[in-house]
Structure formats: structure tokens, C-alpha cells
Image (cartoon, rainbow, N blue to C red):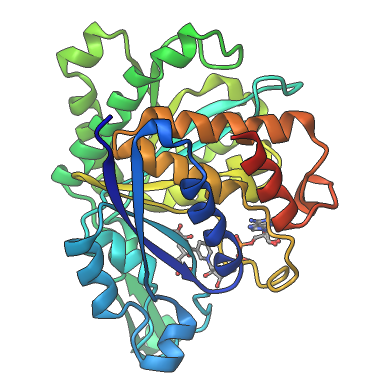
Length: 360
Ligand SMILES: NC(=O)C1=CN([C@@H]2O[C@H](COP(=O)(O)OP(=O)(O)OC[C@H]3O[C@@H](n4cnc5c(N)ncnc54)[C@H](O)[C@@H]3O)[C@@H](O)[C@H]2O)C=CC1
Ligand SMILES: O=C(O)CCCC(=O)C(=O)O
């Protein structure tokens, strides 16, 4: 059988990013050889500690190697300070823009045997909105002195393509539906999230473009229903009736907030993966941050990273390999003997990883 070589960049970043990214590498190395995959890894730097050492949060080498020497990557998390630090800017936000990874795909699900199973995908626009980070600080006595403002940029191009991605994912989820996962929404549905009752131009454009993209005949013929919901009431309904959702498409900031909220529904941020997806390139990245409160204790839940590794493989066209990882992770969760403390267990990161590797 011809084998495929995948060159994977590893960017642990800061905090627990360093404790969970090695798990991603190990699970790739442990995949059965019958899948015909070979991996080559390159360690790459980014993050606040890299900034403190070198003056650059996202070194040029990291971007060059990703662009010219990698097929995909895994990113841990970075410790961006809440107080502005001169010269520092979030490297993951920059990387998404530099590589035009326009979609942040975040599946939020429980195992099928959960008492109240949940299965939805949040498709977050990943390159614009308030994350263009065009902010400025000004002064005006009429404003009480100093004030600050930020640009919220929404473009036709980005809105059309993110909604198209959401439609494609809704179509792809048909297989899950056919395999009888009880909690999945009964038919393909994309919920467009916005706040265009207030932000009629920016979110209004997002809404119009999303509707246009989802009106394409392949989605209509594939039975993809489209609904829209204002983001605040969306949060309410998400918590009351999570089973009402299948695929949610949202501008960058709402998508970020909704997905951390949805993580609470499935038990922990340590379970929820994401993939930053562009044309022919994907970076797997757990949804969580660098978790300074548990850093160095060896108890970070590695599952979000393992699922992000699988998600990266899916977007690189290796669905079978991805399925192996999902199955091994679900088996660990279903048995519930070796769970990390965020899930009420006592297992260390290492114990959870070893258990999942054994199940591959
Ligand atoms: N993509 C990225 O690099 C992101 C980075 N951050 C950065 O992370 C730092 C910390 O941010 P926080 O607001 O505390 O959010 P966080 O996601 O790091 O942590 C929130 C809570 O979830 C827990 N948690 C997160 N991941 C976990 C895991 N794998 N296992 C067990 N528990 C887990 C943490 O212990 C904490 O109690 C900040 O500097 C922030 O800028 C935050 C989000 C995303
Ligand atoms: O802390 C950072 O540098 C980035 C945090 C942004 C974030 O939560 C996300 O976009 O997933």
C-alpha cells in the first residue's frame, strides 16, 4: 500500500499547551501502520514566553515553516496578557490571518451514551470581525477623558465562504445521522447567528451573505434548512435546548464566546476541539487557553487536543485515521475509569493519554 507522508508543525505555545501537544504527536505516531500514514514533525515556537525571549510572539520561521514545509499543524495555547504589552499581539489570531485559515470549526459533543447527548458544530469566522484588532485610544473631555474604539470588519467574501463551509459541514453530517446518533438534529440545519437588530450594517451584511450562500442549490437539494437567531437569545436557547442545533455559523467573536459556553454543556473545555481551516491546510487547536491555574500540575485534560488532532486529519482528507482517534477517546470517556479532574476524576494527563493510546 502506498503511504502518505504528512509533515506536521507542532506549536505547544505556553502553559498547558506544552503539556497537551505532546499527546497529539503521540497519538499520530501510534496510529496503525495499515492506514498508510507516515508523519514528520517540526517543533515551532510561538507565545508569550517566546515573545519575552525573542521579542516576537510569532517568529517568522514559524510562519515560513508552516507555509512551505508543513501539511498541517497542532497548536496548544498561548498566555496572552489581559493588560496591553507593547509589541505583543496574540500569535494565534495573527497566524489565522497570515495563513488565511478562514474557518474555525468547533464540534461540541458528548459521547453517544451520555444521559443527555449533545452533538453540534460551531463554525466560526476566523479572520475578521473585532479580531482585525484595529483599536485606538483617544482623548476627548466630552467622553470623560480617554476613550478607546475598535473596528468591527465584516466582508462579503469572508461571510460567504464561512456560510458555505457551514453548509458543507451540515451535508457531511448526514452520515452521523444515518449511523443513528440519537441526539443529532433530525435533519441538516444551519443556524445563522448575528445581532443585526442592533448592528444592521456589519452583522446585517453577515446575515445577508450567509443566507445567500446557503441558498445554493446543493444545500437546498441536500435538505439543509436555514434559520437565523439573534446571538443573545441564542445563548439562552443553547443552554435550554442544545438539541435544537445542528450547525451554527457565527462571526468571529460570537463564535468564540458561544463555543466556550457550549463546552460547559458537554462537561469541560478540556473536551472541545477545533480546527483552523484554510485551502488545503488545517491547524488542530484545543478550544481552551493556557490554563495558568492548573499549569505544571500534570492534570490538564488532553482530550481536546486529541480530538483536535483527529479534526486536523479529517480536514487533510484522512477520515479513517480520524475515526480511530474519536473511537478511542469515546471509549475512554464511556468507561469513565480514567478521567482527569475537570471531569471529576483523579487521572493525570499521562494516565488519560496512555489509556487512550491502548485503545487505538
Ligand atoms: N487559543 C489560545 O491560545 C487561547 C488562549 N487563551 C489564553 O489563555 C490564558 C488563560 O485564559 P483563561 O481565560 O483562564 O481560559 P482557559 O481556557 O485557559 O481556562 C479556563 C478554565 O478552564 C480550565 N481548563 C482549560 N483547559 C483545560 C484542560 N485541557 N483541562 C482541564 N481544565 C482546563 C482551566 O483550568 C480554567 O479553569 C489567557 O492568557 C488567554 O489569553 C485563551 C483562550 C484561547
Ligand atoms: O489568548 C490569545 O492569544 C487568543 C485568545 C483568542 C481565543 O480565545 C480564540 O480566538 O480562540
